[in-house]
Image (cartoon, rainbow, N blue to C red; front, side):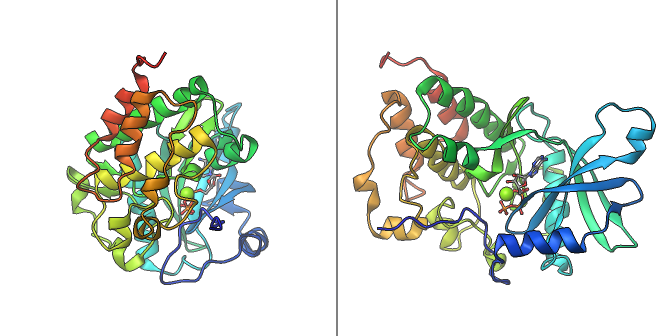
Length: 310
Ligand SMILES: Nc1ncnc2c1ncn2[C@@H]1O[C@H](COP(=O)(O)OP(=O)(O)OP(=O)(O)O)[C@@H](O)[C@H]1O
Ligand SMILES: [Mg+2]
């Protein structure tokens, strides 16, 4: 079977643009300065919905800040007129602002540039590699000590988000950065508040947007079930399997297709993974959400424990 190529999140109400086309359009049509102070320097990344720039905060620079560089995320051209999409951008900001964890990207502000009619988020600038890029450099996967150094903080960040009632919704390698300052989980654009004050945010129907990333979203999400902690556990388990072995557990197929082909029967333990971790990871990879009886915190604990395997 062929591997499917893209990690991008797809939205049902728009066909995916080829990234180079998007890149060209972004560079040519973007204003140079937003809100009178954010000088757009270069495109850092373009995903399914947003574009992210490295910017220089001219105000901070004027006050002598030696590092006035931050990141700015706005909707890409094809979504910037959609009220649903800007509400999602706000929701992404509000969800991540609820989280204070060393391994969750720090958001700064949500703003609107009235002249250019653009809403955007400013946030911490991460310098480093997203895990999808890291995987390109390490096609055989990571040895156990390197894997653990990424898995433990990442799972801690996810478990913490869940403990704050925040679901991520898009756990995949391109949404995790190995930055100079450590692991950062980011992109809560498809996240959801399960509890707490943010439950009153406008309830955007993710089903209607059909925005999940097919090879990392749990099968029940693709079948229309609501996002849950179990959905995040499935996504992070695919990611960890890939980091451990260099390969996606189900050849990057949409999870519903992998389930229907009963691909769990072919699953092999990654070579360097301690047995205890494999037991936990395999549980998190269960296609049936009722069988997926493991939380992000339990996965983290399994990854942290020194097992008898040693
Ligand atoms: N704060 C940041 N600092 C540095 N780079 C960033 C930052 N935020 C995002 N990026 C880069 O931009 C890319 C796209 O960002 P992000 O995932 O937030 O957009 P998106 O449109 O929601 O993507 P998708 O929906 O495809 O997951 C990231 O994969 C990363 O390479
Ligand atoms: Mg992303």
